[in-house]
Length: 342
Image 1 (cartoon, rainbow, N blue to C red):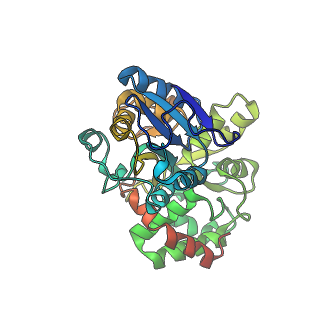
Image 2 (image 1 turned 120 degrees about the horizontal axis):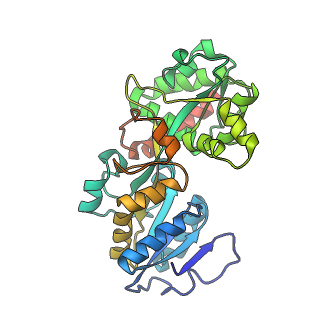
Image 3 (image 1 turned 90 degrees about the vertical axis):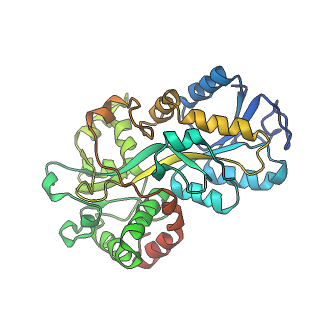
């Protein structure tokens, strides 16, 4: 990989050493990435070794990258944008960041639910929004679905993040897609009634809330739990050992999953290289690297997973097309506001 920069650095020439504003070089691809995992370095190097195409990377959070591409306009050197959560991918799509592409490789390798219907973007890793519970106060037989968390029997027992969190927005968007707005709003209101505390902190804090006894059940993405389990800090491992993971909705549609994904940027100066890069992300080799960096589930079936994820065995995943999570995002935000979920 030739160049790697973070937006937190002082302003410098964009992807210094690359062709620059809208000017293509035949042997490079410019990637704007909201992923910040060291393992991605191996991903870029593997792509270069296989294709001879150099990868230039600019890192920042999703909003920073979106703003940067918009500000650069037609002069942008960006070929690919990578970010996490279908809600963020949808927002980029709405801002005209992506162009639709056709790829037989991606159509064959990626499940239909992980592909935007018009090829605007594609999901390359999966993140399950699971339940975590205290086995000393909650019997697993009491748990079944996300919908059940809004039942009055769980009053004062649930920890979950604020409504401005994109993961929760996408979870509610999935409920809108499956049940309609009226039932989704009733669920959101029931959840607010069952909060053990006002929403605060990140997903790890929700799991810690269960371990400390502040709540009996929490909602969080699975990999936050794996990070605690595999931490070098004994205190983190102790927290993880006090809680159990549960994958909801196994008797119906399956557990809600979201994605880390990417698309080819509109006006990409190295379009063919960009498509080749996305196709590489769907290879077995890249899937292992892409998912392993954050203990996520590979999208391609049969690819080796982290040992902890393997130990959980197979579970049913919701096959709702992830593009619908973005489409229902605006209504999800309005429902959260009406329900008083802050």
